[in-house]
Image (cartoon, rainbow, N blue to C red; front, top):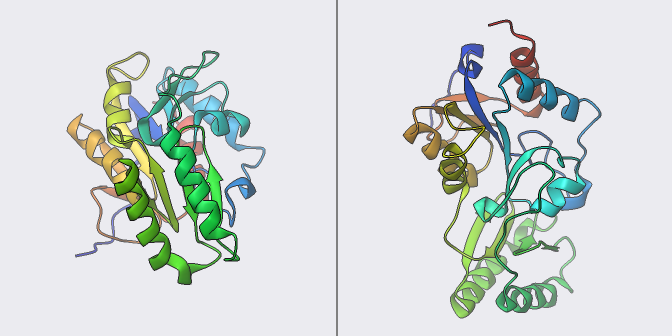
Length: 247
């Protein structure tokens, strides 16, 4: 049963260890992976909020660390590729090596996409994604291909919004939250995870397990989150109010 959730109270941010998804949460989802627009106000806002939280702010994304840094998040605590990669500000990313199997899958994805307008292949540092936002009628075929390649190469299928991503298994956004909660500066905070996609549900679960809560961005759906915000603009407004709040 889908229930409309209440908006999160600002008090939720008091003492929080804040975990933020990127696409669909901090920035609107774009038609293509490289079409995302941050806006000039986002990074200064996150800087203010991080200072308010004594450093307890992390970006947890399906994007790679390399891409997140190219987008401007060089000075932030990062978990990329659904918890397979980690990076602290100014330090090299901690990540497993890129598997030969990922290269083989990437080649197969390109063969699938080459005669299908609207289907895009996204190369990541240690994974590869197949996007069909521009060709939703290809979902069934893309799903079957992703499942077959995952079985053939011993990889995990990550399902997202109009996306199938193949990557090594053994991690998700929930394991990323758990790992970061054991470390400074996140340790000792109350975890709050804000995300929009089904891939963020593990993040919500981990936040709950550590005494915190999840905030769903977008329309009502079945979720572990306790609170919701309707869209990216509401997330930014909520975070801005939190950064300006006098506790």
